[in-house]
Length: 376
Ligand SMILES: Cc1ncc(COP(=O)(O)O)c(C=O)c1O
Image (cartoon, rainbow, N blue to C red):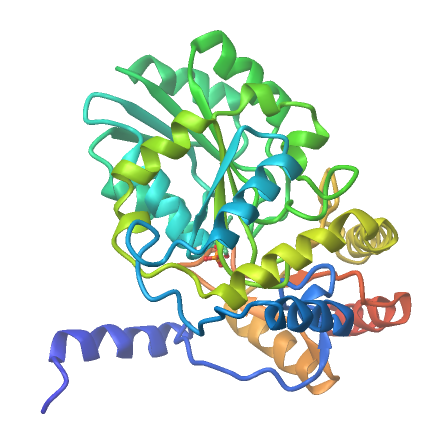
């Protein structure tokens, strides 16, 4: 059967533009690429705990066997949701099968036809997809720009939702959460914060940036994902009991899918039991991130991040130069991946660098050395 010619043309265009995506396996290089910020995905102690927990179940099943609303609601799901709500200092938490699905499930179900959503233009694809599925009106505002949000706010009708990320997945900068929360409170708007890249890392025990900034009462919903610092898979929407009950009734990505397997639930549960004790890891990661941010600024002359975190970017003059840099780094055993459009806007292609708790100062120095060589 012939592949449709219109699709083939789109693929060819990607190749011509140098932005063709192809899968690549990880090769055991120095990790400046994965989202395993705290090293929990590779923690032998955590793996042992998950195995022990798994062995305690006489009714252990490999698969959930159904949606949570039918056969798929093992009591451990409810225990985990109670644990998540307590940890993140909220009334309730509802599990979703991934962060992507949580954003689809939240944004498609909550804002209604006569309502309005304002979202940061740098929001993750899953937030944008969820908004596309919603019947509400939606407007983007300039990245981290409260003035632009305030200007656009004149178009608001009905209930108003404002969607941001606490730490942005590509740029690595933070949303001005305190100012946003105050703005939303003044306007009577509902603030939604995706904490995919702050969960586990910010706050005394890793509760996230909303808790660290003491804003939990002013935030309507938080999305906590488990594929990054938690080292596992899945997500939860954290908020009020009413929000949870509403989503159970109306969120189609929650209702019409098989629940996560028990093993996955036990992995999340066990990882959360580790989080409070990972203070040294969080501190080391932040120290390294700050060191990298400042050193990169000195090398490139480009302003670094105002508040450094686990995500940073190295820019180049062209996509071709970016590719060359990335190949050179890979050859030197450094796993740093380029990110092209449409994942980031045209002109904002970059090497995305992720700093982990298990990276060492020597590894970061090696990376900086190589960056300096390729840039000069
Ligand atoms: C901000 C943000 N939200 C949601 C997601 C999706 O999370 P998951 O990987 O669990 O689907 C990501 C993942 O890349 C993300 O960066």
